[in-house]
Image 1 (cartoon, rainbow, N blue to C red):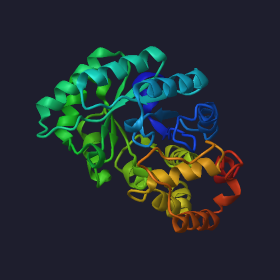
Image 2 (cartoon, helix red, strand yellow):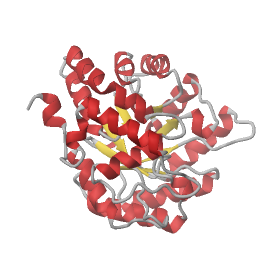
Image 3 (tube, one colour):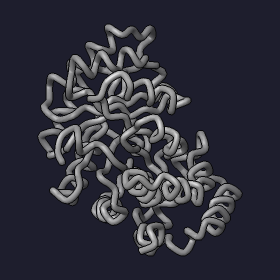
Image 4 (cartoon, rainbow, N blue to C red):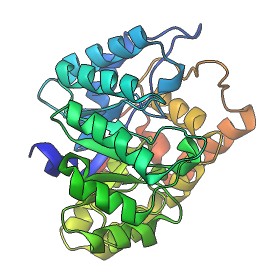
Length: 313
């Protein structure tokens, strides 16, 4: 699949690796791409909130993009975060991403002192008109500070077909997912927030998830069961690992926890967060080890995909 249709399924949002001194860890990026591919996801997203994009300089953004896209090639599609407070900078990021070979871009609304639908519309249309690849509309008021109504999102999708993919993270997500799907058969709705409400979102008609959960193959297994008509099987897989999904998505420490998981799994060399980010406290690390032990995932930290185990293969 290509274009909008390829954005259905499970897309893994990946962290940006840093060395212990806080500089960019370029050596980890090719291995990170290979790790993501091995989990069986449909695509990967870079330079999002989990990727600490706001803490990167423009040259660093470009380098991350170059290395990831070079390794990904045609083997896995890559969505690039291009959010910026200024429309012209978001356009520049989007054009650079397309020229580098990105499949799509992800764009959050700009922070505005008094956001209006007209201002948001101008921002999204300007970026969409500057490129020819899909624009994933990131609806996450917790990070952007900007709510977007169902009516606005549907109107934007109708006016700009490239903006028909909604990364829905306004809580509670299931009711809004249902309204978006009911409002237009052309809109693609992806969940997020660590996959916490994935089953309920799927019941309302969502088309997958785009999130940074550290064991993406769990979400892949859930969606494969669901799409095969095995809803009980999907729920069984989800319920088996729901404790980890809940634990990983803790507010304020979710990035630190996920980078620790990625490091333990061998996807990145270090779990460093760029300052002022801080690592999880020792007690939280102990809790994480306990959750992994209880779910049996401690046996798979460096063993590659757990998908065969989940599917009984």
